[in-house]
Figure 1 (cartoon, helix red, strand yellow):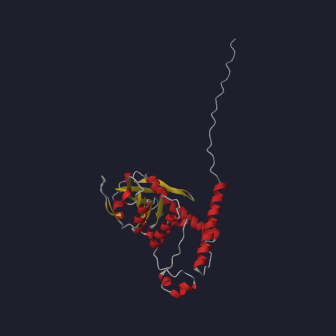
Figure 2: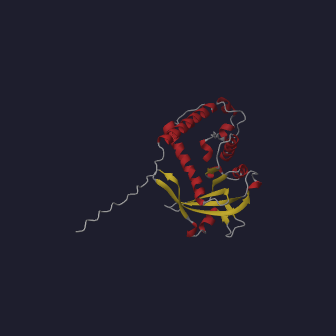
Figure 3: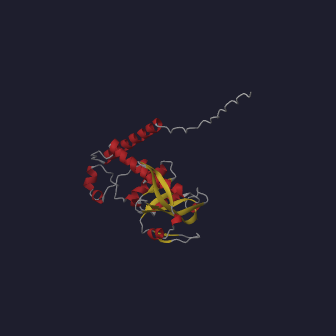
Length: 262
């Protein structure tokens, strides 16, 4: 998910957490039990909030699920774009166009005018264009989740359609009422940048090039790699500042002198 750039967690399968001897041999804390990826995600978000990490949105793919993460982010006053399966059920209320059914069924009833071609960010070959559809499902008083949030927030469904083969992806969303689809698309697109950063960290900094034999060794290695990657990202940013916009000089056409009259 999009929080991984600031926090990290090691997923241990059940064959590890149910083997006390293995845990002791690798110095895993005694109170470390099995945790699903959604549970690890909520723990990472909680740590980021406690540490006052500045963020407004969380984006995640379907592996992290919804439910607990949705409630946690609503209570924290954060927006989200979370991937869901095609069978996830959505319902609207208080809207002029009623929506009810699975994400796939809802997508099949959309008109051509409901789709908008937008870029989810720059890729290796230019803008990553897809067709997008956004449905506002319900407006809710955000204060019932977080007293610091005033006004209405909107629960919605964002659908992405791949141009090449019409493959669909679905996202449940939560954002201030009036949030433009372009904002939601941009936030979902940050996941690609994060995945790209992980690949760079693996290839250039050895994120996965380790044979950690202890709980502490893994965390130290990952922390150092992430720190090195962050430092290089800052250095690259300062070394490649955005080019100033070129301004066209206004040229005044020279008028030919009037020839003398005889």
